[in-house]
Length: 487
Image (cartoon, rainbow, N blue to C red; front, side, top):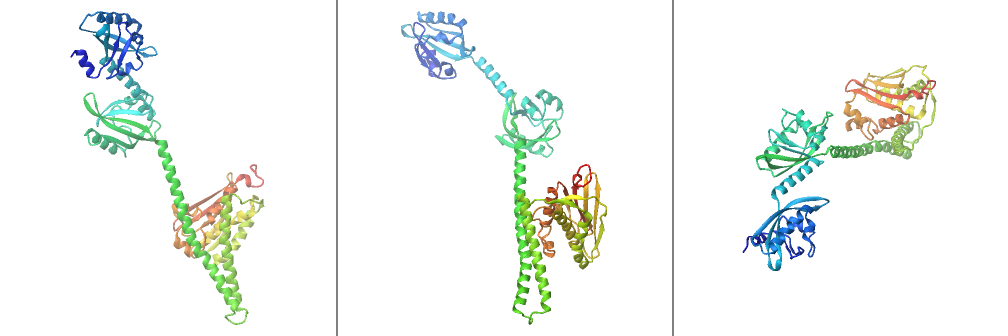
């Protein structure tokens, strides 16, 4: 068996050319097979060669076809299309009837150089950050990695982090994680790594990165090769989804607690209404007379409380649906405050709570919805009286400045923590279930008041210190003060 036949059996690509140089047979195998994809029977083989190589190739083929015997080999430039060429070796062997077999072999050095060039283009042109490192040194990084942290080039980033080591820029809380995963890869304990960590950006913020890494041999030594992608946007989305989920769960919990509280709030006045009305209907204490006036008063009070609860629920529903309209007029703030103080005066007297009216009588008129303003002030006063212990004080003030009109109600009551304030301002939120059972209420008052203030373009603020007291302030914008330039 000839050397050429041995090579062919090993899986070389070859063609058989007739005595005119036309292709008679094509055998595609081995690394050079891809060059024969467009070679067809009957076509001129030299059409695929560089014009400068065709004459020499033909001389060699004819020489072999004329019975020169032995073997010959020439280097040619093979067309890759679009005026691109690659170097191949063509080994000739004479066959029968003037035919010649040509075995194609790739130029291994040329192939290696081309593969290296192509790989470098892939690495440098990648949108993913690529970095090669050991436990102590950074061996390579591409420009895309530098872009992830706000630098223009890898050279710039390498210069800035010289002396910081491969962990420079990694969030302090993530350094141990990254070091441990690199150590496991370098030891061969982990073939492929996939994890997340944070890198310091040029703007001073940390960006979330996802890395996929493996162990490689780099310049004869083990190293870690990582492909890194910025996932900060995905992280923000995950956080937003988590916040939405927590908000939904909180809303569900507060509504559940609200319904549990309402079971008590609704049943108490209803039981009183039914019980006392039955006493009157059945005349259990004799013929109807003065004795029943007390029961009738209890029925009225219970019915009024039940109506307040239902009104709160309906008001909140209208506000959330955007169907509550404002009926604005010019209001005397001092008069509204005085009316509200009258309504809570009896409750304050029962609790020995002092009411202090510090609202100036000469305030300019306020352009607003009278019912809404009264509801806000009355809610402030009711809460203040309700949660102020015996011999405490509740003070109402009103001040005017460039921001607008501020109506404040301050008490010396039990106060709240910042977290409790947030709960109190949320719909259906009640600070403490035990407290809610001790004092009548739906937990809807402050959320309704805040919505009413927002409809007026104003704000509702609560400042509170546990065991010291609470101040609730409703601020109406300056444009609602009649007679001002902003009006």
